[in-house]
Image (cartoon, rainbow, N blue to C red; front, top):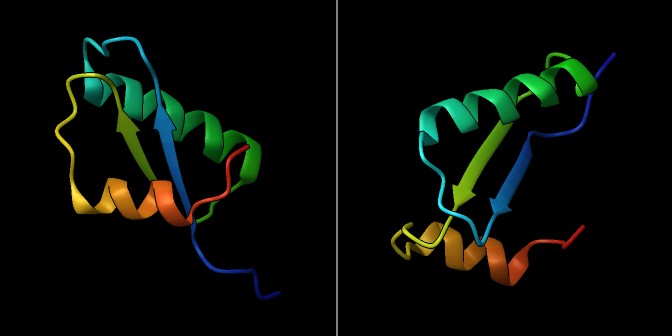
Length: 65
C-alpha cells in the first residue's frame, strides 16, 4: 500500500521553549503514535527562534489548522 508524501509541520508558540530537543521529541513521538510510521518533519518556533527562510516559506505556503 502506497502512502502520500511526507508531512511537514510548523508549531509556533508565543511561549519560550526551555528545552527545544525535548519538546520536539515529545511532539514527534505523539505524532508517530497517532499517525503511524510516517516521514514527518517538525519545525518549532518560539519568540527566541531566529527568522529563517524555511520558516518564512512555511508561513507563506502552509495551511493553518
